[in-house]
Image 1 (cartoon, rainbow, N blue to C red):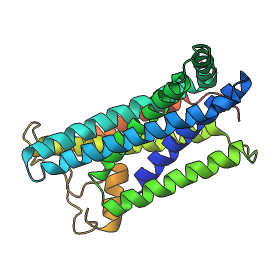
Image 2 (image 1 turned 180 degrees about the vertical axis):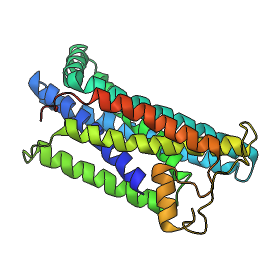
Image 3 (image 1 turned 180 degrees about the horizontal axis):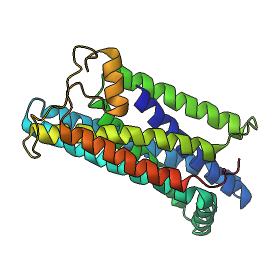
Length: 272
């Protein structure tokens, strides 16, 4: 639930920022009447993202109980961990000139005199955020209960929309740069958990050694099936009986990515 909340909060804010920049760009170049084209693109992007997520979820559960399901889940965990890591660093590096890039693309789209140019720009830009969210959410949904995923996603998205509205309509000053720094660090912890889950699946399939090299067992103290155990498993990759490779990969990933993240964000505080 917590991991889903963080992902939808972060991606919801990114998506709303992109839409706000596109709408502001159209006003800036004197084309406010074309704002509805932006919303056409946004609606289409959300529809495609939802359809893609539903199809992928049904595909995984169609092979329930079979080795191929474990293989698909492991691949999903790996993809989500890699995508989450890459996109978090990418957003950090691109955020400083994101507004300028989107404004330039909006200007080119309007200049093309095509009815669909602006809608296509909005669709491609928002769909990227939507598909990222689908990949992350799908991986977490495989390791959590459905109600926790739904509650975390709904609260995260509503919080993102509330912050966006307060920022753009009510004039609330939010240090978004610092916010994304903190969010990025927290999501790296989730990425480590996804990597550990992927290794667990690969060991179950026999594709990685060490499936029986269990370091400890805390099942009698905190079961993965309990509320807190499930919450920690989803957010940080908690395992009641972790193997040596799982623990090593989890710790190495965190040490590496958090070191780079802290180095990249240790400069002056971003502007509000």
